[in-house]
Length: 480
Ligand code: UD1
Ligand code: MN
Image 1 (cartoon, rainbow, N blue to C red):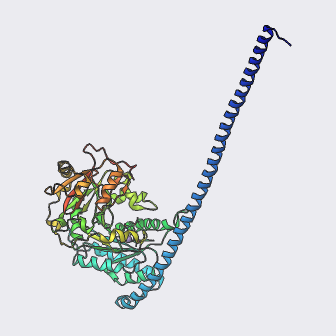
Image 2: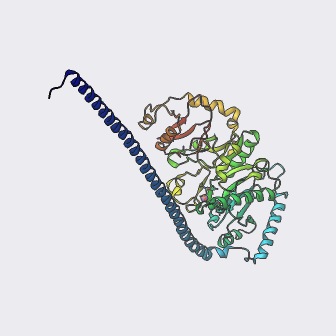
């Protein structure tokens, strides 16, 4: 069979068309399937990811729960151990200290009466002619709970108070209803005014290991109120805790601070405490004992509070928990400063307390307690008022040679006895602070002991100022 040329061309055209159609069909099928499979793969991947995410979230939640459980088990275990330890200590104390107690332990109802009588006696005593007209009376209030070793705090305080009994009357407020501690306190007879706080219920939802901070806060409000009420003529009080020991010049220091605070409204407290006051990084010389600073960080741990600040500002809005951090909030601090010493005038022996012993072992026990008897009444402290201090301090710091932390550690420029390191971020501050053995945390954006953002310390005997850039605009509350 023969075919004509036209037929062949037609055939070829048809064939070409068929091939194109097949190719187009295959292309679309292939392409279409490609899209579909990519889509499906992505969807599947997303589903798998979501599944994994859910699993991880569940695991995290479980871990969190186990962690919380573990924490509360540890706290319970710790509590049990503490109670055991306490009862051992109290039975030892009973054996040794009960004979010193002057009064017969009274029945509960009688006790209340005794408390009231003591209070009345004391109020009368404070306003008696024993106190010279012009003599400032500064009561000392001590919060106690379940430490019979509060005697260590009191005995040391009485030792440094010597004969200034009427000028610095002592009021101890006891929380927790701990019998052995009460027995120890009552043993002091009329050397102290004893008041008792009935613990208030802690707000619901507070986790077990935070409860202590709420108890402390509500007790503080009671204790401070009592102190100001029992000594109506006092314009300020000194606040101590039962596990605090004081330095020889503790009272002389606070008397001078009282006068200073009355001259400068930009000061709202004076504290005995240097948060970075570790033995190796403070100036432990006789001259060092006289060094004082302004600080934007509220230190607590032995501090002076003016009646006006308590009555007009703090008492009505006192927080249910974490009172010390609340004091550090800008709403309370209002850009005011505290005075703090180079070498602490208090130290704490409360290893086992609400915050636990770890911080005590790693930091608190290394805080140096001043042992010089500085006569603060003879010192001119006018350099500490804001008007005199700020410009001088800034000029001093920003005029110093600027070194890096590495250069400080290598002791570069050994002849420069004062140097400066700069930080511009929270992390840089933390890194530097860590290397210099300083506390690295911030409260409301303020590093411990900082004034105008500047923290000072000693490193291998030379003074170092860790400062923000000179054009610093203020603390950043987001720094934490
Ligand atoms: C830490 C602080 C402390 C602060 C407290 C609250 C240090 C070294 N101590 O307490 O200055 O007041 O956090 O933020 O940084 N207390 C009660 N009721 C209680 C438990 C304790 O009144 O239920 C009293 C104690 O007797 C003591 C004071 O609160 O006077 C502090 O208790 P403590 O157990 O010593 O806790 P810290 O961890 O030192
Ligand atoms: Mn304590």
